Image (cartoon, rainbow over all chains, first blue to last red; front, top):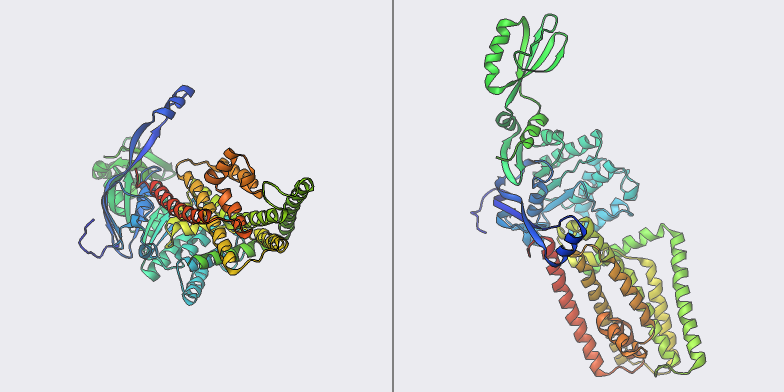
Length: 330
Length: 260
């Protein structure tokens, strides 16, 4: 792999990962037959994506289940070997898993725990101190800071199994950051958490990014995570890159609709003739219209309906994302 | 680094276990009970005869000592860590070890310590001392060194064997059953493998390396170890350590899809 030296902390070019899966047919006979002769099928989980991330950037990875988000994250953190393409994180080739590389990254997975179940978090932290060769002074300082930001003090000496899901996740994140990683991979860090815990973790990630200038790559199913943290999003679907840019741009380029909210003096006349009625309350109607017809419909409404106020808005991001994913990859 | 890590896990094991006093008593009872039945078995045998296939009572106590000592070491760290490893593969938590800046084999091999098994280690040593006292032979520094070396080789062979079994879980997700077979085979090691019929002796020597783990060190301490066996044990230990390392690396490559 040969890149010109650049300021990016992550560079990905034409990255592909193809899984070879064993195809099993239904039925006993077929199962027996497959013992002898296996049929393999190649499934491209990541199918040629290219992007780069600058140091200190927080990038959201969006895509439905099976889009290739986790596979990409695993290749970036050195867990998976790419089938083809070029890949560089902090100037290292991840899959070689050089110590110097591993010392500078962290991987947090919302669905899996690294902290041992039966022992208090503080003991697992101590273990990470040894593994990452953190000096006692640095460890103390970082622990103080993390415990302060995440409100960990009352949790540190309880066995992990006695903590709630949200408390456990806070400890997981702290454990992953004790060595001050420069690149942070967060795979659905807020999954299953209540709204308060989600918000806590969100604001913590933002704060960590601000204080340490760490690069953060985040996947999440919660748009609130992405909206709060990521100025930039990368959308993948069926292993391909659909969009790379800011959130507002995502809405602009993918939503085929606009929402027109109409306020009137009194009553709510039937406006179905102007567009799809999304909601109709006393004196207020929301219409969904094709983007290209926005100007024309607006003009007609102003002309034909006793409007007191009229606003044109983009639909909520969730809706746009859903719309993108419900379509086939282009 | 290995020792530092082992010490950290050991510390955690101690703190963890101190929380469960009842467990401590159960474990102690289990260790003493198993030792008691073994000694009773020996007593029964030697009430009928004064030597068993050329082994005198005190020598068999030495075998039992090594059996208990080695079993203690296996159950102290090797077996629990390897069981965790298989679980890590199944649950995907191996990812955390692979993204740590430490050799993942080392990390996985010492990650679980059952400290009460130190009791077995201590009991094994006591049995060995008693056996040596009864044997009446002097153990000079040379013999002690050879004995230590054979114990080390035995431990290395058993560890490599376990590592290879556990590494199989990269391909076959469920391999727990093989472990049960190992435990059953290990039980056979409380007697010197030379008393068993040929086929079983072969199995216990080459398929499941109980002979090298227990009988050979016991031979060393009772002065019946030949040079051939000594060199063989060292060579086998070195070969197995190297092979299991290679197998482990292959397994990890398979896990990360590099071999496909």
